Image 1 (cartoon, rainbow, N blue to C red):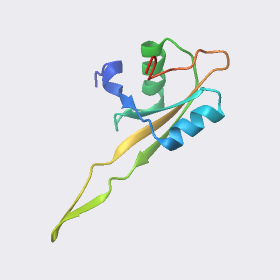
Image 2 (spheres, rainbow, N blue to C red):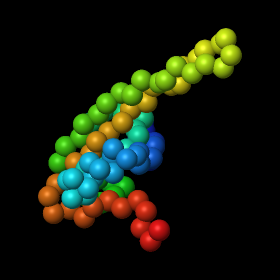
Image 3 (tube, rainbow, N blue to C red):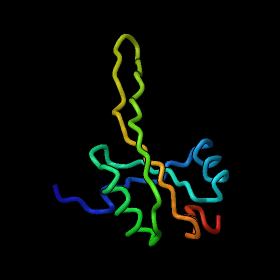
Length: 100
Protein backbone atom coordinates (compact mmCIF):
# COMPACT_ATOMS: atom_id res chain seq x y z
CA UNK A 1 0.00 0.00 0.00
CA UNK A 2 1.57 3.23 -1.15
CA UNK A 3 0.76 6.24 0.96
CA UNK A 4 2.02 9.77 1.18
CA UNK A 5 3.13 11.25 4.49
CA UNK A 6 0.37 13.81 4.04
CA UNK A 7 -2.19 10.99 3.75
CA UNK A 8 -1.01 9.47 7.04
CA UNK A 9 -1.54 12.57 9.17
CA UNK A 10 -4.97 14.08 8.65
CA UNK A 11 -4.83 17.08 10.97
CA UNK A 12 -3.78 18.13 14.49
CA UNK A 13 -6.27 17.21 17.18
CA UNK A 14 -6.54 20.40 19.22
CA UNK A 15 -8.70 19.95 22.31
CA UNK A 16 -8.50 21.08 25.90
CA UNK A 17 -7.00 17.74 26.93
CA UNK A 18 -4.34 17.76 24.20
CA UNK A 19 -3.44 21.38 24.97
CA UNK A 20 -2.99 20.59 28.68
CA UNK A 21 -0.82 17.57 27.84
CA UNK A 22 1.31 19.75 25.55
CA UNK A 23 1.75 22.39 28.28
CA UNK A 24 2.64 19.77 30.92
CA UNK A 25 5.41 18.34 28.74
CA UNK A 26 6.84 21.74 27.63
CA UNK A 27 5.53 21.34 24.09
CA UNK A 28 6.97 17.85 23.57
CA UNK A 29 3.64 15.97 23.18
CA UNK A 30 1.53 16.71 20.11
CA UNK A 31 -1.77 15.01 19.19
CA UNK A 32 -2.84 14.18 15.64
CA UNK A 33 -5.78 12.50 13.97
CA UNK A 34 -4.24 9.92 11.65
CA UNK A 35 -5.36 7.40 9.06
CA UNK A 36 -6.97 4.37 10.72
CA UNK A 37 -4.62 1.92 8.92
CA UNK A 38 -1.41 3.82 9.78
CA UNK A 39 0.91 2.15 12.27
CA UNK A 40 3.41 3.77 14.63
CA UNK A 41 6.28 3.54 12.14
CA UNK A 42 4.29 5.33 9.43
CA UNK A 43 3.23 8.05 11.89
CA UNK A 44 6.81 8.56 13.13
CA UNK A 45 8.15 8.88 9.58
CA UNK A 46 5.40 11.29 8.55
CA UNK A 47 5.89 13.63 11.53
CA UNK A 48 9.67 13.64 11.11
CA UNK A 49 9.43 14.44 7.40
CA UNK A 50 6.65 17.05 7.56
CA UNK A 51 7.79 19.02 10.64
CA UNK A 52 11.56 18.31 10.48
CA UNK A 53 11.82 17.08 14.09
CA UNK A 54 12.99 13.88 15.81
CA UNK A 55 10.33 11.69 17.44
CA UNK A 56 10.98 9.85 20.70
CA UNK A 57 7.82 7.72 20.83
CA UNK A 58 4.35 7.37 19.36
CA UNK A 59 1.25 6.16 21.21
CA UNK A 60 -1.97 5.44 19.36
CA UNK A 61 -5.59 4.99 20.33
CA UNK A 62 -8.66 4.00 18.34
CA UNK A 63 -11.55 6.33 19.18
CA UNK A 64 -14.92 4.67 18.73
CA UNK A 65 -17.54 6.61 16.79
CA UNK A 66 -20.50 7.95 18.73
CA UNK A 67 -23.99 6.61 18.16
CA UNK A 68 -26.22 9.40 16.89
CA UNK A 69 -30.00 9.41 16.59
CA UNK A 70 -32.33 11.41 14.44
CA UNK A 71 -35.91 10.56 15.23
CA UNK A 72 -36.36 6.82 15.40
CA UNK A 73 -33.36 6.00 13.21
CA UNK A 74 -29.88 5.73 14.63
CA UNK A 75 -26.47 5.59 13.05
CA UNK A 76 -22.88 5.58 14.11
CA UNK A 77 -20.08 7.99 13.27
CA UNK A 78 -16.96 6.32 11.90
CA UNK A 79 -14.13 5.17 14.17
CA UNK A 80 -10.88 7.14 13.94
CA UNK A 81 -7.32 6.88 15.21
CA UNK A 82 -5.55 9.37 17.47
CA UNK A 83 -1.76 9.52 17.83
CA UNK A 84 0.17 11.09 20.72
CA UNK A 85 3.63 11.96 19.38
CA UNK A 86 6.40 12.71 21.89
CA UNK A 87 9.35 14.68 20.54
CA UNK A 88 12.92 14.10 21.69
CA UNK A 89 14.31 16.55 24.27
CA UNK A 90 15.83 19.64 22.70
CA UNK A 91 13.58 19.62 19.63
CA UNK A 92 11.68 22.75 18.68
CA UNK A 93 8.00 22.44 19.62
CA UNK A 94 5.46 22.14 16.80
CA UNK A 95 3.25 25.24 16.76
CA UNK A 96 -0.04 25.17 14.87
CA UNK A 97 -1.32 28.67 15.59
CA UNK A 98 1.70 30.92 15.11
CA UNK A 99 0.89 34.60 14.95
CA UNK A 100 -2.78 34.24 15.87
